[in-house]
Length: 224
Length: 104
Image: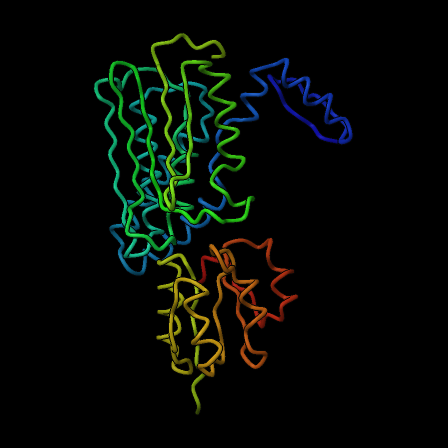
């Protein structure tokens, strides 16, 4: 038996009634949004702790900075917010990228450009960019290429654009492909939150994978 | 006394450096190489008369469990990983030991 806590009500659903579970979720966008909410990958947390443990031996100042960044990151995730500002979310994103950088090899190149373009106070749903960035690192790392992992998040007049380009190997097995469940969930979440005001496109271009997310934050949000 | 020749294989640069530093500090161990992917280690491990491989499990492309299957049987494998869900599989491929990160 599977138990789900939705808006303080516990609903019990038998394991074999997946269809019932599915239809309940479709009828309740809030419940579906809860299910789709981006969460930090536990592997990210444990690998980061392992890196910090090693840094204590090799570079104590960097270890301190990393603990600080991880604590900010966890605070953001633990306090379950449904809406934040672009500025706060971009700070979260910067911390995430800094911690992911600990895991790059010396030869791996990374270009990051983040600029909230005067839109820092605009409301936005939290952690919309992290799935895209996680993918860029996952597939861009360890691909022998001179092309850097490139991450750009910019905003102007309430329009925010997140654009990533990373080298990848097109013949990776499907479970590991860059269009996996994370991006599917993100797509559905964007649809529920922003409808036609958000577009997410992904394309493989030779040995590069390009992801482009556009959100118009000026539109009223129907599910908040 | 003959030193034991060791290889360290881990794609996480800091974790790799830590295990490598432990090997270097241990008088009875000799570092034959440290590698950030299993592919890069194939030649050394298959040719190099290695006694012990410290092997991470979750790595892109060739993972530690797959690599373990081609390691010569006289070479001992010590898995190093942040995730205990691989422990049982690790012992199925004849691991000598299994260290959960962070390794102290």
